Image (cartoon, rainbow, N blue to C red; front, side):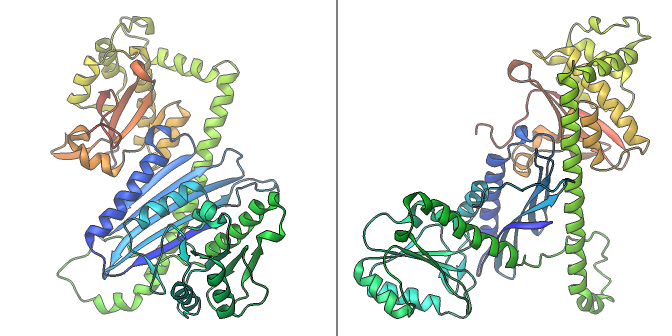
Length: 486
C-alpha cells in the first residue's frame, strides 16, 4: 500500500470531553461524506471504538487499477490527544497505465482536518496549527515568524507569501495545506523588507512564495510575478503536491494502543514484567496485522466492484440475472398450493410464504408484525429478497462462506446488503435496532436496501455468528439514523 496523504496532529492537556468532540466531528464528516445509502459496490466502512476510535473506508476505483483506503484514528493517552488521517492506494490492475489523480489533496480529506482543528488545540513548535493564514504586517509579527523558522523542534513546513499590494494567493488556495503546513502572509513594504533582511536569503521580494522546511533544507521558492498568469495556478498545485507528498512519505503514524483483550485474568499478574518487555514488539506485530487486514479489505472491495460491474453488464444484456433469480424463486415456491408468484397479493401472504420457504432464516416476532403491516412496496420483491437471503444463509451455515464474504455472497445473489449502521445512529436510536434474542439484547443493524420513495423497504437483520443464524428483525421503512429529524 502506498501512502498518498497523511496528517498527524496532537494536543496536550486534553480530556475525555476533547476526545469525544473530535470523534463527533469525524462522525459528522463520515455521515456527510459517505452516507450509508450512497455506499455502492466496492466500498466498505470498518470501525473500532474502544480506547481507540478508528474508521477505515475502503473504496475500489471504477478504473479497476487501484483501491483507495482512508484511515482515521483518534485516541487519548496520558492527556495527549492524537488525530491521524491517512489515505493509501493499493494497485489492483495488471496493466501499466498512467495513474491520473488530482495533484491537490482531496477536498473531502482537507474538510475533515478543518473540522477537527475546531476541537483539537494542536500546536507545532509551540505555535497553533490553524486552518487560516497568519498575517505578519508589523515588526513584532515578522520577528515572531523569523523565530518560528529557527525553532529546531518544528515539524511542519512554513509557507511564507510576501505581499505588497494585490490579492494573496494563499488566501484563495491555502486551505489545500491545512494540517500539514503553517501559512504566513507578510504584508506591506516595511514588513517584507524586515523579513528579507532577517531571513538572509537573496533575491526575495514581494510576489514570492517560499516553503521553509523544518531542519537544514534548501527552501523552495516560487516567484509569482515572473510567471504568466495562466501558469500561476499550476505552479501552486505543484508546490502543494510537493508538500503533501513529502508529508505522506515522511510522517509516521502514532503508535496506537492495542485492542483490549478479553482473555486476560485481572488476578493474574505473573506475566506483567514479560509483557512490558515485549510490548514494543507486540505493537509492531499488531500494526503489521492491521496492514494485512487493510490489504485484504482492499482486495475484497475490488472483488465487490468487479461483481457489481459484471452484474450490471448482464442486466444491460437483457436482465438475464434477474430472470435466473426469478426462476430460482419460482422453484422454491413450487409445491405449495398456490405454486405461483402471481398469487402474492399482499405482505401478509408474502410473510406466510417466507416462513414456509425460507428455512434458513429466523424470523423475530417484530419482523413478522412490521412485515405484515407494511404497505407500498411490492410484496413479491420483498419475498424474492427473503428467498435469496435464505440461500445465502444456507451457504453461511454450511461453512461455504465466512466473515465478510457474507456481503459478497449477497451481492452475487443480487441483494444490496449493508453490514451495519453508524455508531451514532446505534447510540441515539437504540430502541429502533435492538431485539431480544436468546435471552439477551442484540443490535440488528445489518440490512438489505430496496426501492425509493413510497416503494422503499429495508429488511433489518442480526447475524448471530455464534449459532450461524440470520435473524430477521424488522421489515419496513428506513429506521432512524443521524440524518433523521430531532
